[in-house]
Length: 214
Length: 321
Image (cartoon, rainbow over the protein chains, first blue to last red):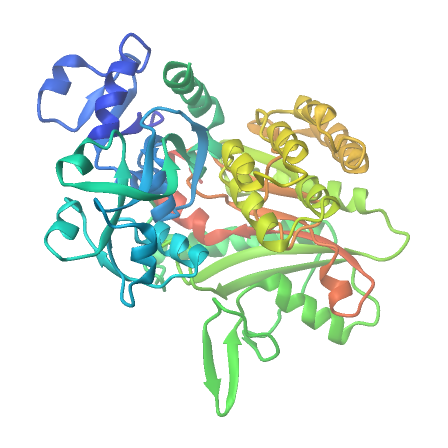
């Protein structure tokens, strides 16, 4: 039996939109025809290496389980999941802030003073860490998308969410009241793949770093 | 493919036969090198750590044997005024898994090399490495990689800089991820940030042969770590000429797994394509002094359950018997 093909997990969505053009013309460029189709396993310009297109929240599991040897995922997702992965490089792109956002006119002090603060977020771990640092307590309202609606409709007093340009916040009348952290795209590797097959995996990791971090 | 096993695996004919054959072959190898078997009880009454399978025996909380090294250390410290130099073991341990696909009941074969004052630790470490180098052949693995590290390369600079336990844990976690940017982030604002970040870069240099040790020459802690580097260099000089075919020896300076336990050289055996290490060990000189005995020790453990899984999922990695 020959060694199995190498799979690299790439994110769909915002990070993926930034990633695909950066890879064009590199050994790991994604096949343009396949990208136009609905398939989620895409050949790259390197024979024997394919890309899996995955949701960010699922991607670390594929890499940690050894299905994909390498992956690219936001550090916000990594921090929330805390999986056993190697994080070989901060690729720099996809930079955004993890921020506490409230309706315009509501200050951080006003939020602090609330006897029962409710925060909607899909980043409970980072939010809890920030609350702990600030000596605050809050009820966390778990949401998986469209968190901007929560303060508008009274589901929560504020949200903790990723902010890149601030356009979506502005459109919903929200402003950033505190920055909890920063996120960017990271190159991750499965521990097993990286340590047991360094000669196969390291050159690919280096090619990705050169293409995306150069 | 991910390895998935039931948490309490029943071994059918093929794996059961393989387990028996491997256990006999490994214990035979150890016996041929002077290791004598000790068999600590399956039930531990004195140490009941988190992660062990615990239950009540009447009013007394007890645990199933969760680790041979700890079980043997207790037995040796209690029952032997002078330690046997070479001890081997075989059997099952029961431990709640870190990864969801790992079994609770795991089969292991391993050995401990114990030295007393005046005996050479280097010779003992090389002896263990030579034994570990023979194991892929005994198990019929077509090829394997042996990673050699040294826990002191991380531990000593962290101790020298007086990092708080929390900050040290953050740095170790970042090194475990092989993420130099996370090391720098964790140390931001600390007086040792520049030195420890530079050291992390040196540790995370390419995994390779003896040349990797050269990366430490540019570390700010080169002088502090000279003894450890010399020790690794001597071990490499002794091992490289006798490296079996199909075994690759790599230096992994950033190996921090088990850093709270290991104090010196570490060894990890991988097979190309395996998702988990197949054997691991190293020097742990603080174990016996913690039990009131001035003995030094090192050892390794072959993780037979992982090998059984690998034989099922990647039979191409093994010679046919």
